[in-house]
Image 1: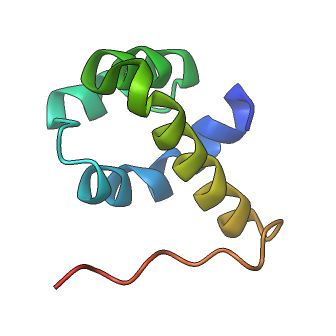
Image 2: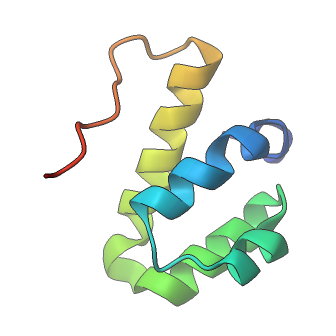
Length: 80
């Protein structure tokens, strides 16, 4: 997903992002505000190299599903 796509998708991503990754704070979300470069900085700061790619992949899959380009993706069922 490029910068323009991320900006357009941001309102749809904000709530599920924080639900899936609670380490991302409201302050982080306000800083990101649809900017892909800031998103990359925030996930690097919160998760380091180990989980950074996992978060980016998750966001890209949600975008692909939202845009209709990845029909097979579904969010996993919530853990009980």
